[in-house]
Amino acid sequence: MILRRVITSLLSASLIALALAAASLPATGDESALSDAMRGMKVQLKLLNEGLKGPLVNEPQALAALTELQVLTIAAKRGDPPHLDGLAPKRQRTTRNAFKADLARLLQELAAMEIDVLEGHPEQAVARLRADLLPLRDAAHEKFE
Image (tube, rainbow, N blue to C red):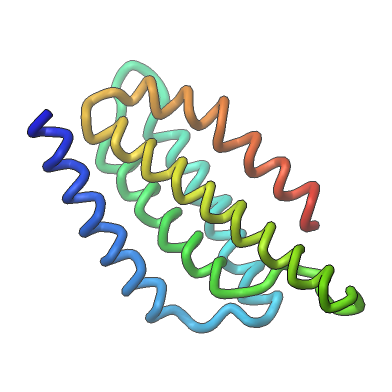
């Protein structure tokens, strides 16, 4: 119980640090900045998967990839989804809100995976990756690409 509180406190501090790191990134108001963040996320997902593979988990690699994914997700939240131009204002707002809500869900999954790795349960992180995170990514790609 105490360990969980310590880890929760550390994660809270990490999220604050991530928000500060993301704030230092260029604003993502244009599609090229969002594309850069998404490409970075793709690379980090591969590194995360590699870090969690096999019997010998590479915990530092997995944690570094999770941190980078969180930073890139926060950076993406600063922008708008692609293809908003031409939509009616109400539709723009609902599309933008859905986009940001999906990114918030992604942050939740990444934080849960980080807790799994930090508490010595990388198999749970792998299960979340396959059952939750990848389907979330795929559904978002269908909605916003």
